[in-house]
Amino acid sequence: MTATFQIFLPQQSVETIPELPEDSALSFGTLPQDHLRDLTTEELSALCEQTEADYIGFLDVPLAEAGQLNQLAAANIDPSQTSLVLSPFDGADLFVQAWETLTPWAAALALNPFEHAVVLIRKADLLSLQNLTPSRDLLWQALIRLVQTGLGCQLADTRIEVADYHGFPQTLPELAPAEPGSERDWLYSLLQAWQPTEDLETITSRPDATAVKAGLLCIHDYLDESHQFSQSVQHDGRHRAGDYWHHIMHRREPDYSNAKYWSRAVGYHPLLDELPDMVAPLFEQFQSSQVLDWQTPLVSSGRWSLNDFVDCCAECAASGDPELNAFAKQAQWIEMQLLLQRTSLDATTG
Image (tube, rainbow, N blue to C red; front, side, top):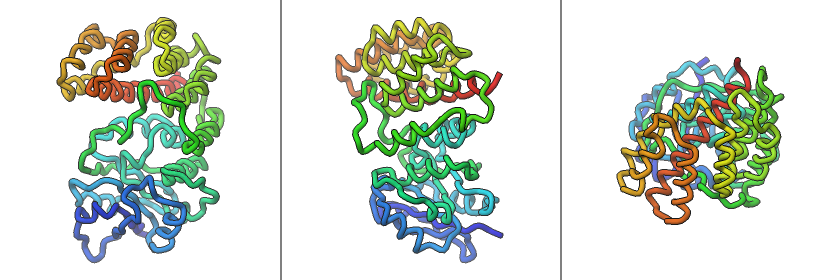
């Protein structure tokens, strides 16, 4: 049986909808809001009721190459086995790595899939969800709750070209964030519900499993809560990932001297050898002297310098330079996402 799909796009993206053959399993619809994150519970229910397709898809940005969605519709997707299909945007390397490395539950919590992929959700599963908390990012909340139940997920081979996508979320975490407001209580509740002993199939390093939770909380700015978990496994784990998250938490607090104490506690972590190559494109993207002046301190040794990045973040706070701040937030995002993946691997392998 061939699965059928209906993908909903914002009104401003309608002109990018491709012409489809008459026998296509794919159709399109228009979202009632300009952005996915503003979709309400009532509007989501109405979309489910109006479509006869097996899967409801969502795309929040204009397409650059519309024909790729036809390839997605032709993919071998079995509605009896697969609840969720993710077709990453071209350039969504960190997102793909997250879904290939982390469990689906942890990956769904780590970063919002709707900012990095065309997301297809089996209609029957969306209809089965009860008591979604009214909030922005309702679809993200729904997706997390679905993968939490263990329903089948598939990462599609098709890469979708979209306009103005550079691999990062639309809003990056701040270097020194404020405490999240009550509008994110739904996310905090789902983060708290994540338990490594329930989600990780095989745990070979319990300190690192605990550090995964510290990382998830830190990524989403719950610094005090992250601190509780990282502190509980201090100086432990295969590569002291808990100490690395402890370091990041204090850097973002910001308590720069304490962050440097914990960088010394980390000592060596394999990620420090990877980050120079991962961050190198940022030095090509940001050409201001304020950014380029940090290239030598941060990466010239061939190893990422934790303490120099602390100093870089401190300069961001002191100078308010927008280019340097944008660079540092992107570097921080790369660092936190990769560290979460490495922490999960340390928890489950070896």
